[in-house]
Amino acid sequence: MTELAVVTGANSGIGLATALSLAHAGYRVFAGARRVEGLEAIAQAASDAGLSDTAGQAGIVAVMIDVTDDASVSQAFEQILAEGAVAVLVNNAGITGAGSIEETPVDEYQAMFDTNVLGVIRCTQQVLPGMRQAQAGSIVNISSSSAVLSPPLMGPYASTKRAVESLSESLQSEVAPFGINVILVQAGTILTPIWGKSEPPPEDTAYPQARSFLLEVLTHNLMTSGVPPEAVAETILSAVQSERPALRHLVGDATVLAGMRERHSDDELMGVFSLSGEEFRVRYSELSGINYWG
Image: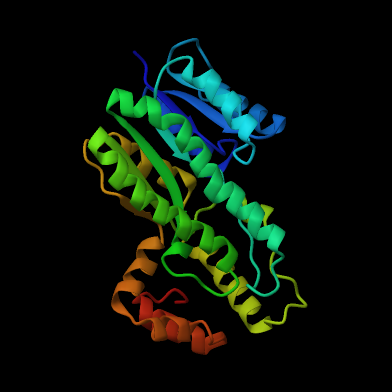
């Protein structure tokens, strides 16, 4: 019997690459998007890859899932679970944003938490009963390198990913006795459309130095250390096919930030963010052990 997988936020980037990867590996993938144009993008990508929906077989089925809407999630999973228990859930849907703790409106925090955290919970709650009954399954949660080391003006977004990390740790302890694996992917700089969808911090911010730092580093990282979403998809496929996968899997320059976190004190790491220009570039290269700027 063909195993079922669900990928949220699958109309582009990591989600689409993962849906295609799982389908090529033999899964019947329900690829979620919250808008009609997203469903159309999924259907086109599936057709181009020769993975269009064939009833009950491996391939990709585009399904409307708005992870912020209880009714949408319930309706989508009613359709999915009618075919059987889900073997793999990839909680990928997410939104980002940049701004200071002080200046970011509370409703923007709420929107990010509703998608990035509560969306994970909503979908996970739908699949767990079937996974427990089957005594098998994998839940993949997408985190970020900003949860490893949070730079200035990324606090609102990074805090959602820290929450996902905590949820994943607790969930792994809860579901391990049922043969269910939790896989946490800490993605570094990934070349996806999410960056084009988010607004930079406003020019009139009270924190201009932090803004300049963020724009310089983000632009530089995208050009020099960004990896394609297929790198994340490959990591996910390898993990779900492993009998006993590790909880954490780092992709791209997340490995660099994790190494910096292990080797250096909070004072050293936070101090580098207060520097600018050449002084920052030299010190960051010293702490990371990599001369990013040549």
